[in-house]
Image 1 (cartoon, one colour):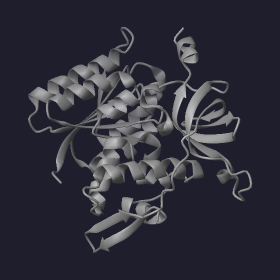
Image 2 (cartoon, one colour):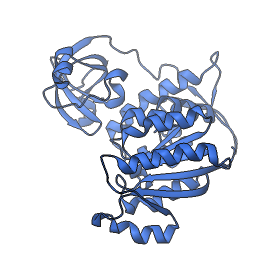
Image 3 (cartoon, rainbow, N blue to C red):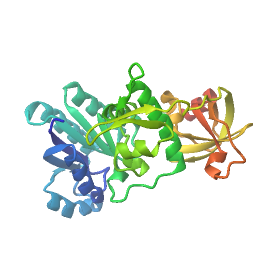
Image 4 (cartoon, helix red, strand yellow):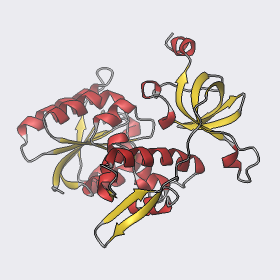
Length: 318
């Protein structure tokens, strides 16, 4: 892989200084850092927490008086555009913010043939995440990766299968690197650490009910999907009501019981919808509920292709 040279541009009014060291460590995994700038109105007293961090890291504070809304954002964007033309050493940019307004900047940088990395919180709008070649969630920069959950595993299963099928050619086995590339195409923020695995290989091996190892050496790893590992799925289309929504997964009550779903199971054009208990939805059945299952997480069914009913979507726009 080519060793990239990064400009790290941080929205200091949107990012906590306690996360900055982790940001730098993450970028350094992907290349060298030529410059690092943090943009904010530094006369604002709550930003004093940045002082020691800036001294320790050698990052350059860029001051912008808050003359109007998003003044610091505009300063960052203007500098970034100038750097794409004035500094030929730079072939990669890291935008550190959870503000979806930077998606146009990310697109412009990509149009110039440069690499774009993003780092932000999990509530970062999809338009910014997908405008980046690679996006890392801020909580993954912490020393301890978040614990895995059954909900994560269930949503992960669909993602792995989709990535495998897109990477597969004429029924041949798939190289682990190809699988990783296709996972990134499906979800630029995909990271094995979200599921408590340090590497993609470890994550794939843990899902041995889906994949089997075709061949493995110290530097090569090929897999195939197990025959019959993915059972035929029901095709019922149901309607129900969301009873619970937690960050990026929730539960639907229907006539056939309770169904779990993650944001990745929502129709792509509706993933930015702000889900609330009481929302009426239409969905396809991926797995029927199993009320007699010993594990409580298996008792819920699984929903896919979630569609918020039109009248509620229109009501949300008011």
